[in-house]
Length: 219
Image 1 (cartoon, one colour):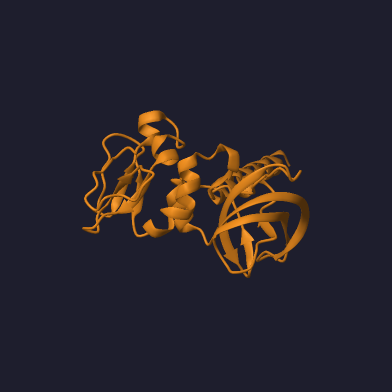
Image 2 (cartoon, helix red, strand yellow; image 1 turned 90 degrees about the horizontal axis):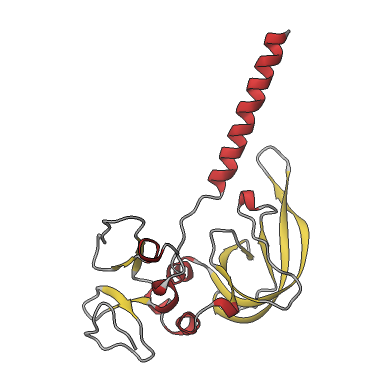
């Protein structure tokens, strides 16, 4: 009997660890530079969140009901996306499965990136979601000026030294190794844009870049 009980406990422990690992894997993603997040998203909006409710999101492969959180939003501006305004966004109910928690009092403005699925906007912890007031002036300007026109460029995150690019159409993102943060100078003040020879390089400036601009240039 004790052997059977021990077997059950072992089985439960294995099942628990498997579920923990499954949930961790379900929300595994690397940080993305704001430009890369913009380019990888179907929708990018500035909005206030004005309400929240739990809704049914269909069934899983076992027939269990999938719960989703629906945030009602008031769109202020769309930087990328469909022709119609976004009035709601959907996310998982828990951060363990990449669900996003947003303030619903309608006072905070957010920049929200996400994907369109079946005509609805879905967001996860892997998307770039920040309070509007925390964005730099350059980031706000690049949302309407440089990010979208530079999606042919690829931003490669450097996690340790040495690191390098594999193509002239890449920019090396070094905020983490240089400043130990993914919200460093390159994230806040630079865009990776295409030069006249089809290579890509970091650019920081308030005026359109010269065709032969250097890899890094201050305004």
